[in-house]
Amino acid sequence: MIDLDSQKVDLDKIEKAVTMILEAVGEDPGREGLLDTPKRVAKMYAEIFSGLKEDPKEYFKTVFHEGHEELVLVKDIPFYSTCEHHLVPFFGKAHIAYIPRDGVVTGLSKLARAVETVAKRPQLQERITSTVADSLMETLNPHGVYVMIEAEHMCMTMRGIKKPGAKTVTAVSRGIFEADDVKRAEVMTYINMN
Ligand SMILES: Nc1nc2c(ncn2[C@@H]2O[C@H](COP(=O)(O)OP(=O)(O)OP(=O)(O)O)[C@@H](O)[C@H]2O)c(=O)[nH]1
Ligand SMILES: [Zn+2]
View 1 (cartoon, protein in one colour):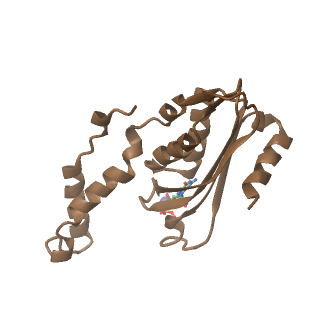
View 2 (cartoon, rainbow, N blue to C red; view 1 turned 180 degrees about the vertical axis):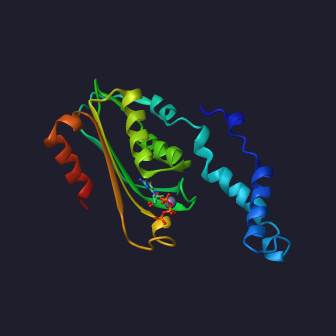
């Protein structure tokens, strides 16, 4: 499904950059505890940015014909992403709803896989929200898609304005959810339900 050859990340380049950062902040990259750090960080970046060369739309090619034309909602999907402005984490939960057209549904896990792929890039919360919604609209052509993401940004918590606990909510409505206030209110009720 995904071309693994295109996944190559320049680990050596990251290692050199991390060594330079350590030197620049006044650390000694040669001390015992830091010896393997550039290598570890390179591996970590390859992992947390692995979504850059993946296409979330690929997942929605797994479809079933179920005759179900009512709401499908997968909620509370945990995710971890990286803020593109500061390269520190932001994390939270994604909720994805859609109303299938002609009974075409995708695998439930594929919704979570799409979030995972899109989150594993240098990101903005708004872009994760709209990319997931648009990928689903473009592949499944459902009557509508509603995506809501709630997250805490470490760049607002551990540095800068330092407001731990502040939550950012982003939501995107496509298709019927844009036009139909009742449908949108219904899905928001389900998302807020325990
Ligand atoms: N819209 C949006 N902004 C984000 C996201 N993640 C981080 N930011 C913001 O990006 C902005 C970058 O602002 P700058 O003034 O360029 O950078 P800065 O001086 O480090 O800003 P402060 O965080 O206010 O200290 C900050 O306001 C962050 O809160 C996100 O997912 N979406
Ligand atoms: Zn940030």
